[in-house]
Length: 92
Image 1 (cartoon, rainbow, N blue to C red):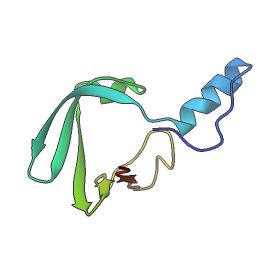
Image 2: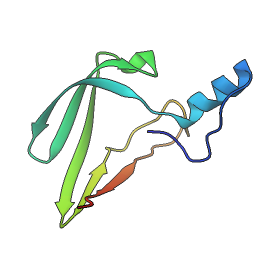
Image 3: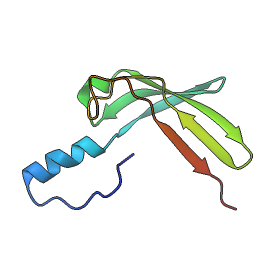
Image 4: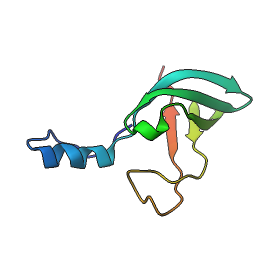
């Protein structure tokens, strides 16, 4: 997931700044009720490797809403609790 308005980096400082607008991880996942839980195998922040990321999914008509639990994010507002909402719309 990435923030809006990202542009190609030209310097190391630019590349470091881009990390503040990015969330990325991969791993095997499982479904438990309305939760989608990923066992993190690699991530943009090494401290997430080996952890689980839980997302809650609700589907209404052609919209899937994915929300995170409240948490501290390492790359934005690290001293505050935040939560994300991602909305997917099915296009046929």
